[in-house]
Structure formats: structure tokens, C-alpha cells
Length: 319
Ligand code: SF4
Image 1 (cartoon, rainbow, N blue to C red):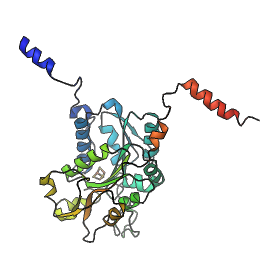
Image 2 (cartoon, rainbow, N blue to C red; image 1 turned 90 degrees about the horizontal axis):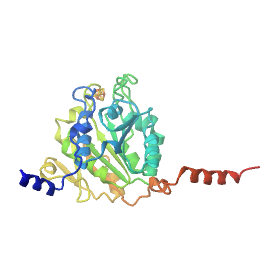
Image 3 (cartoon, helix red, strand yellow; image 1 turned 180 degrees about the horizontal axis):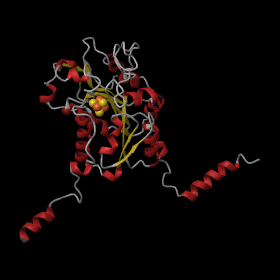
Image 4 (cartoon, rainbow, N blue to C red; image 1 turned 60 degrees about the horizontal axis):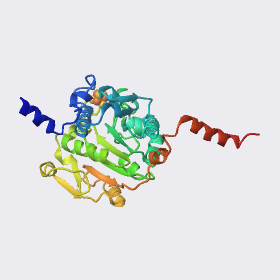
């Protein structure tokens, strides 16, 4: 017994080890077959692999099916207002740079009512992971055309089919000032999904990940039908891109070599001639300016000192 005790003390064991169960809250109430389940599993796996302390991790969401996400994580969370996940997450990160911040948003939440915040969040480039669950439809409110619905999508708002060309969130994000990380993945390829979220989490800035997400209830002909069509995905591959093992890489019928430092080429690959969906890392710049670093200056200054400084400034305007 003494010998065993001695061996254990020599092991470099962490004081706390978080298992998947430590990140799981209540049972997810998404529909059976919804792609959101796979994303939740991948994120919980990331938390365990990276041993993210639950009390130092925050999930912020807006409104929509995807935005129920914080309820299912046993971490801090904020289920906010429609389209307003970004400003809440920015506020959290600005004052608490020590926290790991994730934004969970949907195509309606981010690309419609929240579009103004989306543009500026990309420009602020604060260190956080943004997961856009794009099922190309408003699911929670039972099938209205979203900004990413393909032309011809029949919905309650467009019974004869939607008319306007959809926004491509990757194309848009690549056009925003100070963009630093843009990737696309699909919920039905768990290896690629996990590897993409991991790469996003490692990025020193705002990582924007569009996840092609199945909604088998309202968009049966959308990504839900792509699951049985491997040719619907094309892999963007590079040594600086998403890390995959050869078995996963070889499961793709079509692979394009793409250097993620090349933003012009990234824009070219957003829409492919064969109609397949490109997945991989479109663009990464680890040197882009970060507004949260600016905000972190003097963050530990005592409150009385802050007030002193503020009053000093306000005195300049005294009449
Ligand atoms: Fe998922 Fe669609 Fe059900 Fe919403 S309506 S939970 S997106 S399957």
C-alpha cells in the first residue's frame, strides 16, 4: 500500500478534471435530427479537451432555435434579445478579458436583425468564437424566409417561393473591415466540425464559423438532403488550415488546396461552379488589431482612481 501511495504522488495529476458531464445541463429540446445536437456535442467535447473551467466560460446567444444553446451548457450563459448577442458578448469580453466567450447565433439572428452588430463585431475583432448555425430558415417561428434562404424557398412569408438572392455569410464576412478568421463546416461531418471549432478557439481574435445546419422539420430539401450526398461538400485544405487526419481528408470526393492567408482566393472559393459547399478555413490573419486588448489597458485600476480621472475630464466642460 505504501508503495502505491508513493507512485500516485509522483503523478502530475490536475487538481480538477472536468468530464463531459461537467458541461452538460438539461436535455436539449431541439427536434430529433436537428443539426444543433451535433454542434452541442462538439462544443462540449472542446470544453473537456481544453479543460475550460465552467466558471470562466460564457455562452451568449440571441433568439432562435440555435439560441437555446446556453441553457444546455453548465457554464455561464446569456440568452439575450433578437440580434443582440454580439454587443452583450463584447461587453463581457471588454470588462472580463479572462473569460472564454462564445457567441451562438442563427441566420435570422445574425444576418437580419443583428446584421449591424455583426459588421462591427468583426471589425472589433475581440477574442471570441462565433458559431453561426445556418439552417437557411426561421425555424423557431415555423418557417419564414431568412436572409440566407435559397431563391425559390417556399415559406409562410413567400408561399410561392422566395425571390431575392440570399446573403452568403462567408462572402459578407470576408468583406468586413479587420476580419481575421472565417471558416465553414457542416454539422453532419463531426470530425471536420470539431476540428474547425478547435481551430477557431485557438485563434487570437474573433473567429467566425458558419455551420451548415440541418433543419429536418422546415428545410427537408436543404442541408438535410445533403447528408446522403457526399459530393455536396468540397474540402478547402492546407497545412495552415483545419487540421484533419488522412482518413477524414480522403473521405472527401473533391479537395481544393487553399492558403488561408490569401483573402482574394478565399472570396473566389465561396461559391463553387459545381454547386457544392466548400468547407474549411477561408481566411486567417493572426495580426489583426483587437479592440479587447485596447480595452484591457488599466483594467485593474481601482474604482476611486477611475472616478478621479472621469471627474477631471468632466471638469473641463464646467461652465
Ligand atoms: Fe432544429 Fe429546425 Fe427543429 Fe429548430 S425547427 S429545433 S432548427 S429541426
